[in-house]
Amino acid sequence: MITAASQGGDIGCNPTAEEIEAALGGASVSDNCDTGLSADYSDGDVSSDGCMMSQTRTFTAVDECLNEAVPVEVTVMWKVDTEAPVIQSEDYAVCEEELPYDMTVSWTDNCSGAGELTAVGVPFSETVCEIVYSYSFTVTDDCGNTAEKTIYVTRETIKYGNCETAFAKLDNDDAHCFIGDYNFNRWGWTNQITEEGDYTLPIYAGAGQCDISKGALVGNVVVSYWSGKVTVEYMINEGYAMSEAHIYVGCDPYPTMKNGKPTVAPGQFTFNGGALDHVNGLTAEFTDIQGAFYVIAHAVTCEVICSCGQSEGPIYATDYDPMELGIDCTKEAESVSYNTEEAIDISVIPNGQGKSTLKIKTYPNPFGSELRFEFTPNQDGDAIIQIFDLNGSLIDVAFTGKVQKGVSQIVRFDGSTLPAGHYMYKFLNNKQIITGKLVKNK
Image (cartoon, rainbow, N blue to C red; front, top):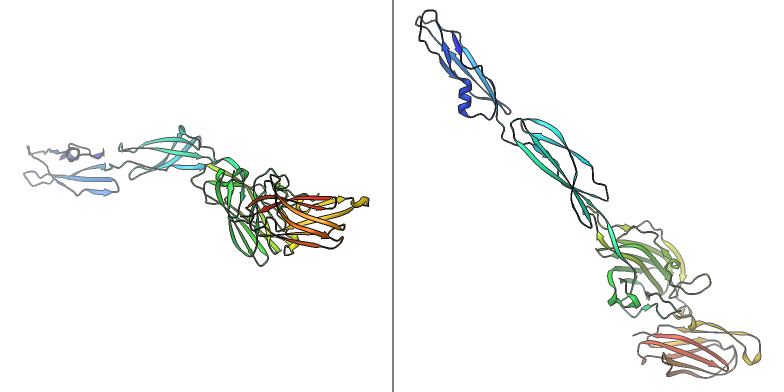
């Protein structure tokens, strides 16, 4: 009879060859007649089932009379696993969301199955733009292989600052600063679009007194004028965003209030973009426009202090319906001055008679070379139109001569030799005196 020294069974993880040999062990033999017998053995191949290994040793013996003992088998099993589990989660960021109090992640192992781990977040770091929490996990498999991993979750914020008023400006003499017209104290530019085409107007923020060196170039406004249709598109540079947009399109340099007084208040402009959630662009369309017109493109832009790394890219304000304006700016008389004093109605009492109204129009104003004065005298007599600089010095005489009541006059004044700048004119007819402002372009 054969008696094995080992019972075999599971001997654990990653045993050495010596440990496997010891687990298989030896055997003793007893017989009713013979003594001193020994057992022989043979080892089967190592078999595997995933990570589990097994091997069987078979013992045999024969006595002197050639009687064979019943064979005895010893089987040992062990696991081969030197790989640590894998914690299945990665760092990530959220935008303007609260960081989770705790986090549950999954883990897998090549031999020991899978499971879940939960960890509570701990503050890790904080800056102006982001807060980071860490979540630490540890798991050990059946063979003592340990995995550790820390997941970092970042809360990103969106912040804007240094918001400024911005206006678009043509890079030529067709851009005119508000300051000095109608006692406006707001800076900005009204821009004359003289013919069909595509125009790119840089837009400046914080350019006080119309001094672009004081401001920041925050983007461009593209004005496209074709076949009676005007498209105004804001394109704000990276690093800035727009929270307001107002556009004026009209035959006169400025819009007017209900009382007829010109204004540069954006709320009185043709188009109001509404409350914009810090967008990067906007497009507005205007139809049924004829002739040269004026456009004022206003915005409020802010610097982007913080942004989310997972941003979807530029955001554009859309879905504005085209605005049908139905304006005809082709009439020369509508190309009037920038200042009400240049086309002002003044009530006078000539020669002690009843009231009459005299209206003087100057165009184009600003002018380049030729400037025209148009008026219809309300009394006969001598008339003169004088040009002064802002110091009150007489520069030139545009007209002198007799005029007749009710007979329209158009006076052409050659101002090509005048330096660019601001001037005054004075019209005298008997006891009537009318003054107004003039602007000479470069």
